[in-house]
Picture 1 (cartoon, one colour):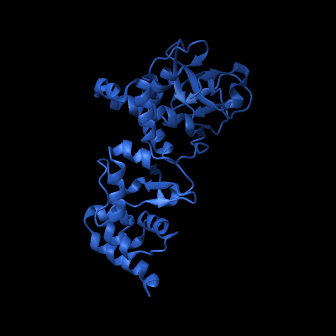
Picture 2: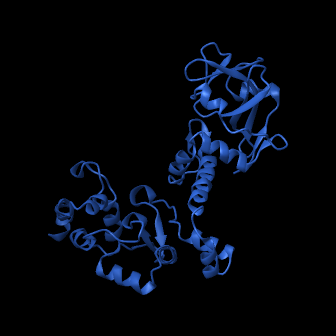
Picture 3: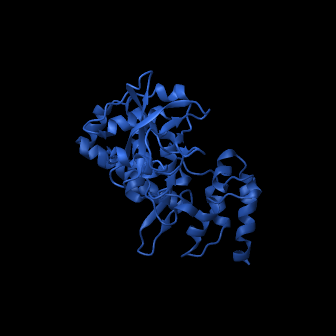
Length: 305
């Protein structure tokens, strides 16, 4: 994530969507005045406005930072309305920009304070970096949100043994990255995938154990045109356990050698009214497996005639 840089004061109205003029007032969600905009900080990689610094206090001697997402110009076109109350804004972390820039740690502190990290995590899972959320580039949220989430989880981990087992910090980082499901063109229908190496590292499985589960029908394996093996991540829980009764479902679905597994994956991951808006894979985990078996039998019937 690139640092956020300060823009020239004369350009402030243009960056916040207001006509040229001085002393732009920021108004909270209740219509109360917060203070005047003193500076706008933009994403230096895109040029898009991202943060505003606002003068607060009796004499305007202190500044507080507010994200521009969700802000809009007032009807009078000389004020900017933000989706926060004044008490929230004035308690934001005190930030002293370094050489007219917000650094990554400073932005992370603001992200966390304004509750932007959960949004970032959700956006990151979309695998579409160009999505715009509330007028802001979501890739910045994605990076900040992921870093923040990882930091909170590492806080209670003893990383020493992990680093020792991997051989170095860099080797441990490489293993962690390899365990992340990859994004691809079939994500919308099937979800992200593990390749064989990523699956082994993520759940500490041997290649033989993976092959045996695939052969038994307990693990769904998809092959690309170049014979690369992929495993949809939706079929695993956090412990690496598969979907209950998957074998029975796969036996009932179409069996064409080339397309069968891909069709099965799409069917398992498609929500429908017959299952109250859930996917067959989700319902199998709830114990309502008979409903899924019945629907799988119906779906595969034309191919069994």
